[in-house]
Amino acid sequence: MKILNDPKRLVAFAQRLNETLDAAGVVRKGLGRQVEVAHALHVSVRGARRWVEGDAYPSPEKLVELAERYHTTTDFLLSGRGASSAGSTPHAPGPPPGHIPT
Image 1 (spheres, helix red, strand yellow):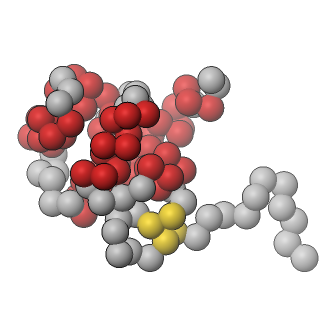
Image 2 (cartoon, helix red, strand yellow):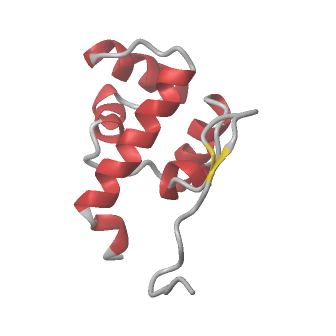
């Protein structure tokens, strides 16, 4: 699917994932973050690195686990819509494509 292979969307996913991990208090930089995520979700460090750095998406099952474990939603991680974490204010979605303000 072309949308999932869009590098800009992958980078945006990684930014939202890192924002979520920051809010959850996961160590910020480098291998420590990757190891912590890998251990928590029972994946390889390489797999976790690919998510955190925006090289790949997790499987649907791991995406759900990420959202549950770090108190966010899959919608926020994938699209930026909705609350970034439990109890936070939802992000307002932008206008639909092609929308012309009146």
